[in-house]
Length: 119
Image (cartoon, rainbow, N blue to C red; front, side):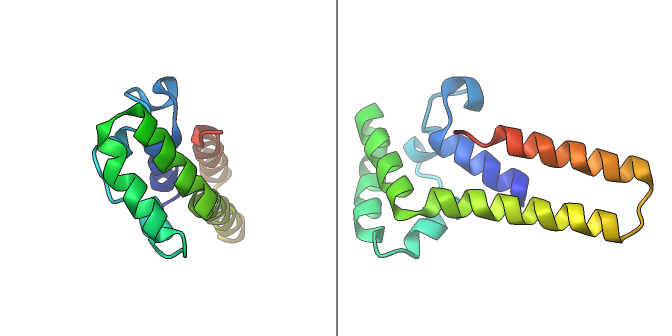
């Protein structure tokens, strides 16, 4: 779940270098990601929906959709969900008496997911 949320953030807010494609590609493609679902639960949804409808028209509209999504708190909520999910995974790994190599691998994967979150 944390990986997918980070991927959604990259597809929405990531740079060309982070995403490996045009910035805001998920917005341009009108993808309905969990990030968009989180935004739909906010009072800002009418403004966000309007901005998302325009996003396929170009970079200025994409930037506006990004601003509206960030202002709604959806981006912050996704980042918090990533942190909570990784915290729970790390805790579970420690409590489950997994082999040390498995705990180290999980910690490495969690760190890699955290590093993928666009700033």
